[in-house]
Length: 178
Image 1 (cartoon, rainbow, N blue to C red):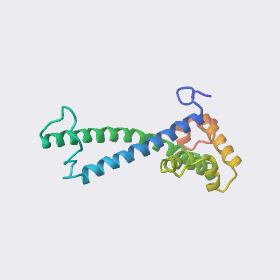
Image 2: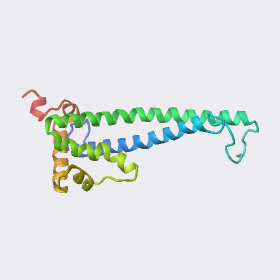
Image 3: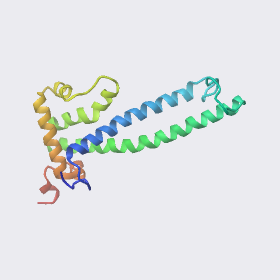
Image 4: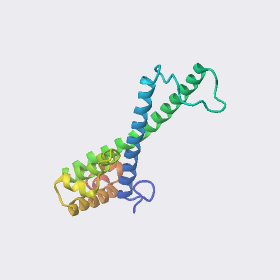
């Protein structure tokens, strides 16, 4: 483990944290899409209409009840949008690291890492799954080669740091001007 990331985090841990962010981004975007669609296509538009059985302490004014429900949906959409923006920043950082990896280590490493850490969460969320064997099969390499590329890429990230990786630095010596 190194102090490259401002804390004791390995390259593998950084990639795993990024993968979790991409997976969460997929979930947030799907919830946003569903809420936005329900607001646009709900009964009477904007979420108006019968919302099911009346709850205790619910207002007897249907317009007021619809307005309260609409306000709750709008607040949830605003919260999810804030979450999405933060998670999108994490996804963009992952993309930039993979682009730098492509420059420093080559397409084979970048393709394997992108397949698992960037595109894999989207596949996993849709139920198609994404294992390292799936990545190896898609890349046309053995599982052992895919795992070796993951190890080399993680060590490289730990060595050069995130900012160095985004710049496509090959080694820490290149980053330090040596």
